[in-house]
Amino acid sequence: MSAASASLNRRLIQELHKSRTEQNPALSYLEPLDDSDLHHWHAGLRGTPDSPYEGGVWDVDIVIPDNYPLAPPTITFKTKMCHPNVHIETGEICLDLLKAEWSAAYTISSTMTAIQTLLTSPEPDSPLNVDAAALLRSGDTVGYESLVRYYVWRYAQKHEM
Image (cartoon, rainbow, N blue to C red; front, side):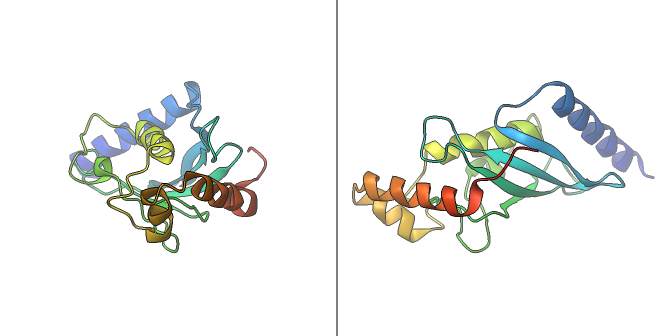
């Protein structure tokens, strides 16, 4: 194992330990898919309280590159999500933090908190879901929130792990 690989594994083990000892209210779980592969995690992202997303839990896939934390993880929603900045089919997330604004100071857990914050702070001017963005840009927040609540009810209501 190279020194870089050993350093990455140490960092990921530290993040995993911290996520298990310091509960993140944004997450119902955060862990590697398989204990033998620290480069592929999954999480349960909770909907923000007092928002149309409240009560939902979305399964999220996290792929960690070899040059993490210098490069961001690739994070996608596996559960269908209605949000202007989330592609409705692929689950891809449009968030600057996952691209140009990434910093090695971020952890997987803090990144998931940023994604939860995005749920209630959409950016309809750079959409991956043009239908959801169009509702917001037209000022139809009632329609947008009704659509979000439907998606929560249909796809994201599940029991906590």
